[in-house]
Length: 588
Image (cartoon, one colour):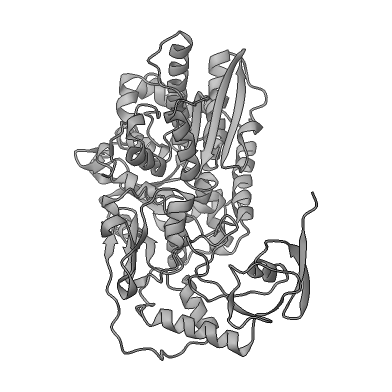
C-alpha cells in the first residue's frame, strides 16, 4: 500500500512528508532548527507521558489563533507554518525566562555547566536579565547515591527521565508527585532512590537536559590516589569506552581510539593499564562452562535444571531482576561481571605475583555504565570491607580528566596494554555491544561442545539492532536456542514469558541499555541517535576482526591463570573468586 503524503510550507519552503510527520520533524528535514527542551529523539517521539509540556518549540500556523507546539503538531495538507515570527520568538523567550525564574543560578559549579540544554537556550534567546526575579526558589530534595546525584532544585519538569524510566526501561523508579510549585520528580511516595526500584542504568542521566540528574564524579578521588606514593593504582578499560571516547574530542562517532586511550591513561599517572577484555575472556570461560554444565544435565534428563540460563554481565540488569523478578533468582548465571572478575583477580593473583598488599592496591575501572559505580560498592564484592574494584569512572569522566590534564588526545601516539591482565581476544571486545556476549560465548561453547574447530567465528544471527532477537545454533545436531534483548522494557517481556512457562530458549543475553554498553548511561551523549550507536558497534566488530585470536579459550594468559592459580573453570577456587549470588530486593 502506497504511503500517504502531505504537502505544506514551512517558512516559505515547500516540503512533502509522510502523513503523521510532526512539524518539528518536517522542519529538521529541510534544515530548520526549531529549539526544543522537553523533546528528545528517542523512539522517534517526545519521550514524555504527555507531549509538548515545555512549549519552547511553539510555531505559528496560518488559520490558528494560538501558537502550536511543533513536536506534537502533525503536518496536514496545505499547512503554512512560520517558525520565527516576532510573536514566536517572544513566546519562546518568555517560557525560558519563566523556567529560569525557579532555577538556581550556580552555573559555574554545576556539573552540567557548558553541556546544559537550558543554558544553551538562554544564550540562544539572549536572556541577559531575569524579569521574573523576586520570589523564593522552590527547595526540593537532593540525594547522592553510589552512581547518581539527584538535585531536584535544578529540575525543570521536562519529564524526560520519567518517560525513559517508565516507558522505555519499564523500571518505574521515577514519576511526578505533588502539584504546583511543590511538584517534583521522584520515586513513589517521595522516597529516596536508594529505597526505590532504581537499577542505576543511568538512562535518566543521559536524557536530563540540566544538572538535575548527573553521575557521581570520582575524578578528584582518583587524583588523590594517583598522588599517593604508598598506593599502586591500576586501571581497567571496558570495551565500549574505546568506541566512544573519541567523540568527546571532536572525532567522528565510531572512531576506535584504543591505543590513544591507553597512552592518555599512562600520562595521567596510572602504574599499570589493563583491559577489561581480559576479564571478558575469563567470564566466557566461567559462564560458558556453566552453560555447558546446565545443558548437559538438561540433556541427561535432569528435571531440576533451570533454563534458560541468563547472562549476568550487566549490573543494571542484575539490579532489575533482583527488584522485579525475585522469584527467578536461580535462573541467571552466577558468574560475576567482567569488571568484578578483573578486580578479584587483580587483588589476589596479580597482587600476589607483584608482592603488593591488597590494602595498597587501588583498582579503578573506566566504564560506559553508571551502574558499575553501584556494583563496586556491593558488599559481596568486598574482602574485609576492601572492594575488589575501588571505584569506577564513566567515559565522560575520563574525557573530562584528560582535558583537565591538558593531554592533546588527538595528537598522542598509540600505546599497548600491560600484560598479563591486558591481553584479550576478539571475543572480549565485542562484549560492549548487544549480542556480543552471546556471540563470544558461542565461539567457545561450540568448540568445547562439538570438539570441532570453528572456522568462521562470526555468528551473524545474533547481531542486529532489534530490541529482542532469536537465533538457533546447530551444535552437532542439538539445536541451541538463544535470545538477545537490550533495554529493560524488552527484558521484561522475555522474563514475563519465562514466568508464564512460555520459554523457548536455552540461553538469553540481556543488557540494560540501548545497543548494549555502547549506549550506556556513562557514554558521550547520543540522545537516541541510532547512527551513533551503530558506528560504535561497527568499531568494536572491527577491533574483533583485527585480533589474531578471536576465541576466549585461546587466550594464553587466561590459560596461564587457570594453570597457575584457578585450576579449572568452575573449580572451588574459581567459584569463590569469580562467582556471586543474588538477593531479593523487591520493594513493597
